[in-house]
Image 1 (spheres, one colour):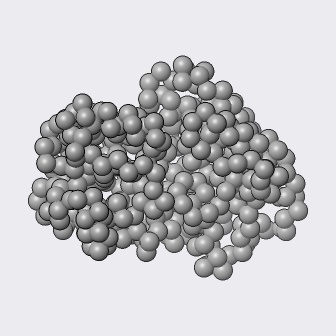
Image 2 (spheres, helix red, strand yellow; image 1 turned 180 degrees about the horizontal axis):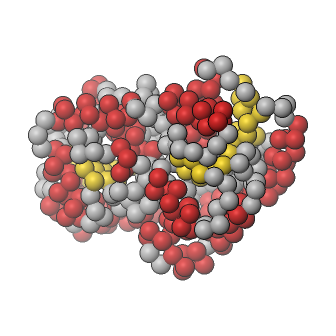
Length: 371
């Protein structure tokens, strides 16, 4: 078997590009030959990386439209040149490939936040993606569609009732050697932030503060007088708004807004609990990363949360400050060592090695059945 992955980028980091990268690495370890078709192969290397602000949103739109159109045509030509027996898997945008991995449903994310129609109309890119994927799922472009969890498979069928390809469910994985408990990092980060070893610390990581529930977490601090919160991610405007919210909640001294960080691991390792009361997640890989670091999770029942959080390794809550506060209290009570061990054990069941093997079984079966 030979595998060709189609994605705008394939590299370490976070998001879709990281998923493709880890799968590539694990397949290589198993002796499976892999190759890539990326934005550069689609003659889109001239497009800059997307950033913040209006310019960043326009750049992102250009990249998505280019890889969806020009990329689809050129990926199709590349597939025609591949040797017999090659399996192709598309991770984003392009309308090409035997298997399509559905990394998120834009319309579902808008519905989860409320005012879906207005949100869609305000951003032409959302409408483009919706129309593109309506054509994708109603046609015969792919042999099967892979959703990341059962909730996403249901959301896919709800959003696009005419889904033609059979559906499979394979979750994302986590690098359990890269993400693991590290007492030294825990101490170093706390020292840098002026936090004592005994201080109770919650961690929030995300670049979309409103969708991922940071305002509700800050509001919950009113009920958790001694808890400190480390926040990683967000644009400068988002960070300024979070500063204001923290001051209004009387928690300005306890909210540590660090902005974007190249490596989230030290901050996860410094926490006693990870909190993510998100309105929508296609999967929520950061949940697995927190668990792998031995940090219990307080999160809403979105993405992978219902499938991996079982009460021993974290608490499922509703998206409001009282419920979040209660969930954090429960996680901080009792035997913290046992919770940490349960968190780590849950992550180990979702290693990239195990996930890569699930994909291979699907490819070998040629079906859309759940594995």
